[in-house]
Image (spheres, rainbow, N blue to C red):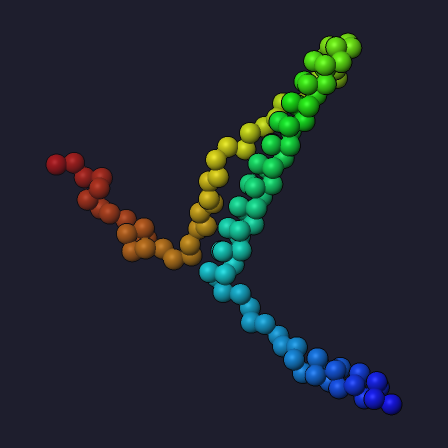
Length: 109
């Protein structure tokens, strides 16, 4: 008898606790985009390190086995992703200097 009452109580509490989250702000969206970009670069670095490790294992295998030398299929080289470069998001605001032409810039003295 107590189990159905307890289940109904838990259901009622869980329904009232759920709330809608506010929409993310522009700063939060930019931070999420930066995190996503950094994670994509980290994934590329991990893939590069895995490729290098696989190359070392293959070279060691062919060095110790000595059967046939190198594989016949041409494999692509490991692509180094390079250092992380943060992507700069364009801002919506245009400064006063950017929005108005400078008439003195083209004049010769």
